Image (spheres, rainbow, N blue to C red):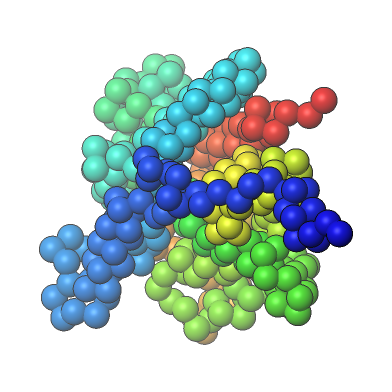
Amino acid sequence: MQDDSHSTSSMRFDAVDWESFDAEGTAPTVPRWLVGGTLAFVGGFGYDSLSATGLPVDLTGLDWLLVAGLFGFGSFVLAISLYRPRQLRHYWEQFRTDRLAVACLGVLTVFFLVGLFGPFVVAEPKLHTLVSSQPPVWGSIDAEFVPTCAGPVVDGRCQGTWRFPLGTMAISGRDMVGMLVLGTRTSLSVVLGAATIIVPTGVGVGVVAATVGGRTRDALLWLAEQLQTFPGILAYLLLFYWVVEGRLSLLIAVFGLAGWGGLARLVHDEVRLRRNEQYARAAELGGVGSRRLLGRHLLPNVAPAIVSNVALQVPLFVLIEASVSFIRLPVMTGSATLGDPTQISWGQLIYRSLFTAGLPAAWWLAGLPLLFLFLTVFCFNVVGDAFVDALEPRG
């Protein structure tokens, strides 16, 4: 009579002790630089928040959110470059075939650089009412709309000057270059801040739901589905009257916490789908444990879907942040904008311009921030679509 155990084992691959076989240390362990960077960030934030003196550099909650986003984004890019250089080169070869996407990626690179370093290069615009409503260097405006013309007056029209290359704001006279740079910084904070909340939460919940299963899976997916139908703007409206400072951080937190449901569902479905593919089943038959299978095989192949989803979702938050600047609510002293009055944003610049000098007289005051807003949202959408084609080719 044939031994049943022998016949069963002959139908499987020989189990391999992958931990001892992996002599080069390529097991899915967390890199030391990532652990050290995370501890440094948490320690710095804790010391700045809890200590009486704080750090020598004055950082607001929005600044810490921006730092967290930069750390997360930089860690992802560094990890791909160090551990998956061949895969990164392959994706880039696929991506670069779309010339419009490459051009948009260049625009987004400028957006990141200006938002990150611009405030350190361009001084914060000062109040200067005597030179309000100045035209850009290539334009002109009827002299009756400006208290004092900083450039020459030709045929009754004030000409632009290089002293204010993009003109000045109406009434306040603040330099438009500095205002647009600060608006870029605000939009960058929204992009990175929202991604910092959505990506770890959505990926973590999706992975737990896919690997644990059972009632835990059902509860997490139910929560994710409810969040997809939850109007984040209502939560922001409820908290608006209790928060005076840091409303932009509140906006990012509310929409970030309400926006990870779709990503969690995506990660759950992708992990379950790829776990049934031949390479994953072969790895399991070869003795690969669940943790190694997830870290070495499943998550790297799910990462393209995550990147594509986030790249397409982020522009929505930029539009929301710009849109709330046009909504005004009644307060004890009259009315207040739904946005954060302490932060300069493109939406705020558009709103101020429309209700001061107006478009016919000084179209650039609203036109320039509107152009920046359009280009940023358009380029995020184009790059997101190109990511889908390059990272997840179909057909």
